[in-house]
Image (cartoon, rainbow, N blue to C red):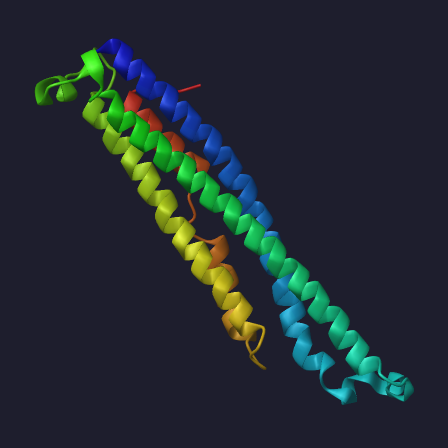
Length: 199
C-alpha cells in the first residue's frame, strides 16, 4: 500500500512540473493578448484619414500602415494559437497522469479493494485522496483551458468590430484575473492531500 501511495506522490510531482509550464504559458498568453489588443485599438484610428495630418499627402500611406498593422495582428494571433496548443498539451498530460493513476489501483497484483483504497498509511493520504486530488487538478486545468480558448477566439472576433475597446479591457481583465490556476493554490492542495510539503 505504501508503495502505491509513493507512486501517486511521484505523479503529483509530474503535475507540479506541468504547472510550471502552465505559468510560463500564462505569462506568454497575457503578453500576446496585450499586444494584440493594442493593435486592435489602433485600427479605428488608423482607418480615419484625418489622423494622418500632413502625412495625408503621401500616396497610399493609410493603406500601407493598415496593412502593416494587420500583418502584425495576424502574426500575434498565430502565436496565440500556438500558445493555446501548448496549454492543450499540458491539459492532455495531466489527464494522462490521472488515467495512469487510476490504472495503478486496478492493475495486476496491485488490484485494491474499496477498503484498501480508503486506507491511510500514517500521515500519508489514502489512494482515494490521491485520485480525488489528481482529478480535481485535471478539472481545474480543463476548465481554465476552455475559458482561455473562449477569450482568445473572442479576441479574433473583436478585431473585426469598429469599437471594441471596452470589450478588450474586460477580456484582458478576465484573462489576467481569477479563475487562473496559481502555483500557490495547487501547492496548498498538494500539501493538504499529503499532509506534508512536497519538494
